[in-house]
Length: 477
Image 1: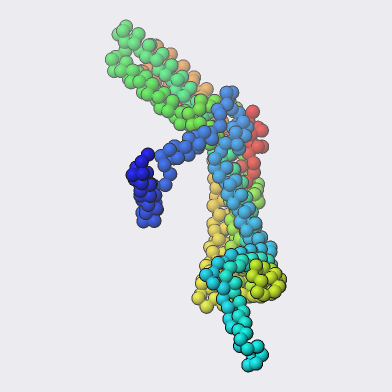
Image 2 (image 1 turned 180 degrees about the vertical axis):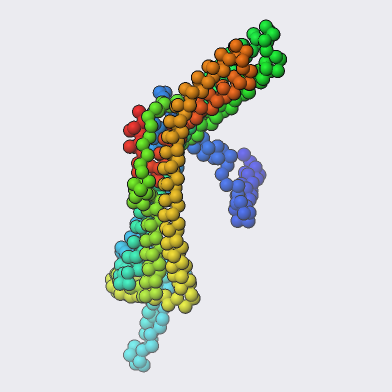
């Protein structure tokens, strides 16, 4: 490469660097951020973090264990708890000694000197007056200082207590997130089971409709059925086939939701094991007592109350002087003064008198936050009671629907049998048979959903009570 090309390449590189710096300093979006390749790498990394799909059908216990390892919301909440832990260490560090060091080596163009004025006759004739160097041309200085805060006002202690309350609140929020995600796993698990059962119901309905269509076509051929009656049955078959497509879509969506909650690839062909047991619903007074004692959302807001009160107290104590003590050591390479290394100790204070009004505003804001959070506690208690009562009653209603559906399915099957016999004998129309099939399909659908929805409501009640879902899982084998 010739000198001209090298110079042109250097100029081009300089222009490119200048363009990047100019863009970073003058454009709100900067110099463009990540490259497309870097963005693709980040997306690929996020997709690669999904767990491998299991080969066997998942039990509910397996699903919860899988979510504990793969659920991303729980992972985020765990990182949030780690951040709160570090904030506690930061607040604690304000009570511990801090050590700082500084150093500097300086070159001057000339040393600084000064002349000495002596009394006349002190020097021999012809002897010049001495010159004293007050600063050498080059020398280094090193300083080390250790400072220990003396928290005589209690400001730092209250700040530490506030940070610790924030950590406990974050720990309660982590538990709330874990319970919410476990409840979401339970809901998605039973939603998938319900979608499978509803698809089976639709398949059974299609089989009945096709059987009815074959009978209707035979009767129409023999002149025992009108064209209108035959058309009604044909329409019913097409509608049922379309409903089967809707059931397939609902089944896929339920599986996608479960996979996402478990941390699996969204399109993984996850299979789940059926559950036949009935959930047990605790009485409302017992559920309310447990919720008030263990609900993590309520615990988090209570910890937030303490954090706000401690923060307000720490700000109020900041009106007083801040006292500190410590020691320092200084060393210089300059030899004009001795000793070159000097140690020292000190006690002092700083006092922000708040003449700018900022501290008063901060204290007023903190006290308003304390009052606001106290109102939020009352609101949370009322909402918690309403949620516990409503969820408990919803679970009981689903169990009642399950009992009714179990009896109604047998009755609907008998009704359909009678209607089909009447149709074959010419004493009933196709509409009568189709209505009987619709009644049977509706009761089977209710039966398919009632048990699973009762389990879901019971898991939501367990979440509100702040209790782990392991006990519920143990009863769903």
